[in-house]
Image: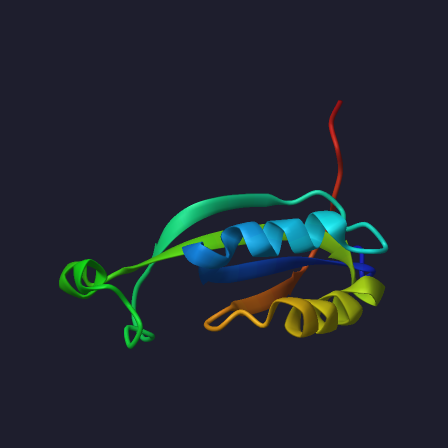
Length: 103
């Protein structure tokens, strides 16, 4: 396992998607590449959902995932909290066993 790397997953309202992506693309030092996509959230957090989402029982969300050096993680999260302040943003990290790029 590469103990210096972890996977960071961010889940946030779709309305904040451009703000999150721009923040990461402009971050200093630069962030590694990442992937993002749309998803539907199930469970809690329906207080601010639209009537359509309440009827359907799921909330539109965006997800972003990246592999990042653990030494960079806390600073990036602190900068994200300070510069974006996105309500209902959740995140988690996971260890990365191996990471590679096939060309």
